[in-house]
Length: 517
Image 1 (tube, rainbow, N blue to C red):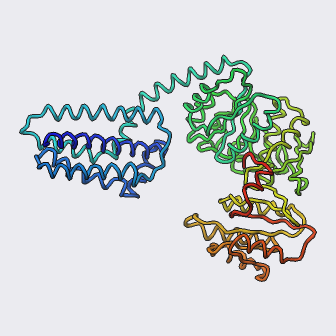
Image 2 (cartoon, rainbow, N blue to C red):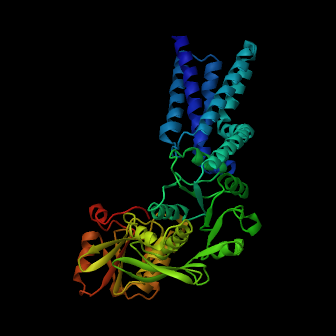
Image 3 (cartoon, rainbow, N blue to C red):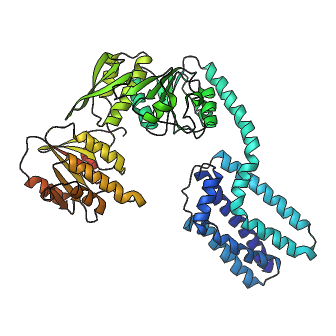
């Protein structure tokens, strides 16, 4: 019995060590293998590592000859630690078990086997040294994950370079495949999705799965292409450094490069690694991007008058947004889309230019734009009795709420906001709600605050802006809000913006379709 409990304790030690290392490798991966962010999280949240201090206690039990009952208690203690890190207090969300993490875990296992062999080679008279070595190694678990990543980095870089080079050679052999890179820090994925819908009318095209951050991810995207007839690959990208941008550019050799916003480390034109590749199109409405890169060898898109490819909103109504796109003041063409908001029209303006460059006619583009549908509960036009509803109830970003309110200005008739306010924003919650309230007071003639716990900031923002108190309504739920709306005089035109709440049923929205924000 004594030996059974002893070996059970040893096995439990191995399980506990594996669980904790898996936890710390997962945490490091959550921070994109950034050691500084990883340690910052550990020091900020002590419960992520404090339980490991007490692992010296069962280590002593194992090496100093505690009786069977003591070892059984240590077994239960190790089981509790395992549950703490694997189920009870595993704050970091489980991510895909990547090959990198699997390799580091295997390397960690090999190092532990070597450590155990060293300890077994020690004479029995040196058992206290063995205890000390094991105890220190246990406590060093949080430091083991970044240490393993540092040890493996040279080999990883060497293998990665070979993989990237082979992927580049593979890309060169794929004749007829054109690559479009959409780079920046915001809107890349939405712009890529819209462009895919446009180009699908004439080409076999695909958007890479997920955002590209490194050259290795770009190489994997190339290796994952399983359709030999694919004509266009669209790559939304957000790189963390100038070096990664350069490596991605050398790997992909894109025909068209669209820049939606400023990347890290590319504030100056000479640092822009895409300067020598294909056609460059940058967001002319982003002053920081325009000042950093300049206009040399680039075209600009946006809604500003100084943009080369300029979009202009003509009207907004029950059919959606009617807008025009002109190329350097010429070739002005009108389009109609169900999408709302200046940001989406800006993205479509850049996509229209890219589609024209690739050979699509304005007639083909017009048809494809008309087929784009909004995402469920995100700036979605819904017909309701005696009014028109803009359902933005799933939005949780106060900045996008301000954009939605400005969209109301394009509509005719009475403008009404129905909102529950914005929560879970931490220190900026009150200021953000106050700002939304001020803008709502400026644009809307009636406002309904719905819910029992509406943030204080939005109410004060509305009233501080001089909004008439009698036009500010409060409702506990959707039924009471509908009663308020029904009691108002029937206007010829009335537009309701439902912001940050569950306003309508999913069934009524799905009848109108959706495909992405």
